[in-house]
Length: 223
Ligand SMILES: [Ca+2]
Image (cartoon, rainbow, N blue to C red; front, side, top):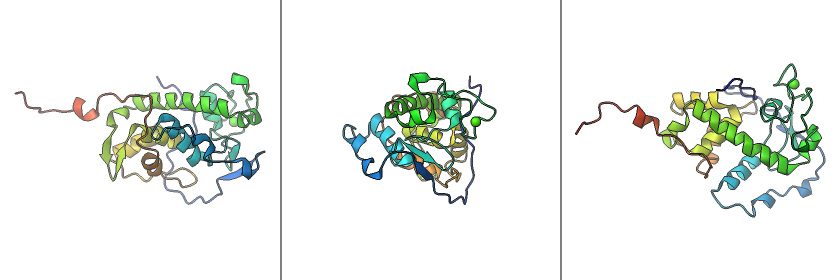
């Protein structure tokens, strides 16, 4: 059961927010940021390649990125997500990204800086996060819409994972319910559709359940 949806997901409608997304790179000179560095061992279309592409979208692959809303790291986790993943303790507001509840010490992470300085932990957190995202996708029965064409896009499993990372399962459900016509964006104006399309078609370690169309079929010929 999904008891609490603590991640910073709000089904934002179209927004005109034009804030520069990334304002702080706490320690790393730009010359050290090689967006191709982590791609060398990635097989095209693999799950690792998917996570690498997601990092590019989220932070240009910068593990030390902190954006203007204080989302942190290569995958741009917020406080609520890191609470879900066991890295951060609850405070009175899980969505303000002040991390004032403190860190749990999981995997040796005791601060924001610890997290930013540890790509391996961020990658592990991303793997755990995607498992959680897929559970949400299943709870919302969205996996059974995998590979459906809606609007002008194909809803692949990796596209669903990416979309859920961006805006949460509720937004993805709205996208599905409106047959791909919903114009959902994050606070920086990134369209959900872009994540579905550009991060779609990768292999992922999760298998969708039977397509919804099969279970709902009626009036099938009896002979
Ligand atoms: Ca807080």
